[in-house]
Length: 83
Image 1: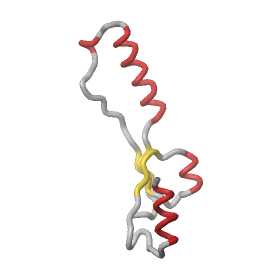
Image 2 (image 1 turned 45 degrees about the vertical axis):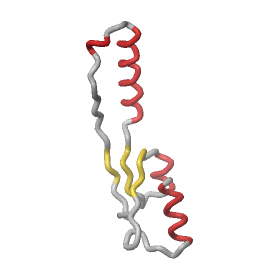
Image 3 (image 1 turned 180 degrees about the horizontal axis):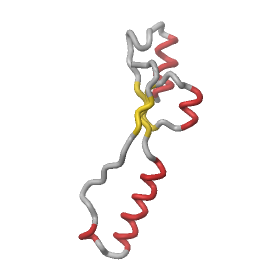
């Protein structure tokens, strides 16, 4: 989505970051290679997957009391020039 916003903004003559600030969310390696200028919040995809599997295993084992109500995982900010 962020790449689409940047492309459309450039078509319309908008200056990024002076007139429009854009931040991406996901931070895949593909986006980092294609748009290194994009500030991106990178999610820990592998850790999300492992955490989801552990929670699912506890649910299957009927250990609902051991499940946290919320799970916080770290994110990383890749700084570019879009804000």
